[in-house]
Image 1 (cartoon, rainbow, N blue to C red):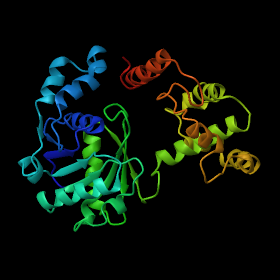
Image 2 (image 1 turned 180 degrees about the vertical axis):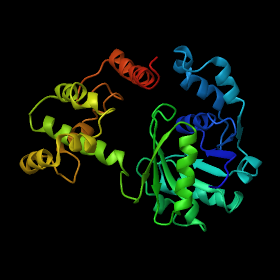
Image 3 (image 1 turned 90 degrees about the horizontal axis):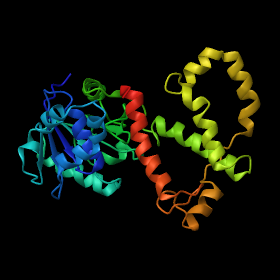
Length: 309
């Protein structure tokens, strides 16, 4: 495994700040953040981790010590770039922006520096298309909020070496993440493919008048959603047996939504400007108080589930 000491985060937005904080879990790492404009990384991390401190998961002293190992620069000639052993890019989800960022990094980083792209949907093969050393490039999809959700999908491009993928997996595991290897560069990687298959069926149920949106969400939250953190779908299939799983699928799969285009209901809501939390109405109507409760409740739920606090 390549020795990793210096880590650079390219992009100081919300995800970049959270990813930088994640890597400070290993005291041996020195973490740098590069952005084209001035960013108060420490202030952003303090805000994002306030609830962790409030609930006693993290002490103020621990937070400040970890922040002391993060440096920031807007200078492309900074040693934070030239000395980086591993770079995680966290810029906008725009192919041209990502490609130009890595072109800049390849001119300033060492030839053996590992490059990672944090994208939830974009192909690492396409992002790395123009790089000279494509074998040292890999996708790393951190789930939002990046400092709380354990999963990181490590996605091999069509040129990623096994050594690169394994090194990144070990680095992520060493800072408390749960890395999973996506062996093929496919749209949606692993988890988003499953998540949006569920969303497609949920939207179809509403569209076809089977149940309203609130009922669909309750049906998930108070049934299989409760057991998913403990019992994955294939583990569940093994538990009930291949015979029962086959019989259920033989009957029900023909009735499930299999459209390859966005739902007409989704198209209608979009055309009407009903953008969910952004406008107060989407599949359901939302008051400002309900929106605030949903946003703050997610972090509280994750902290309670992960840390028992």
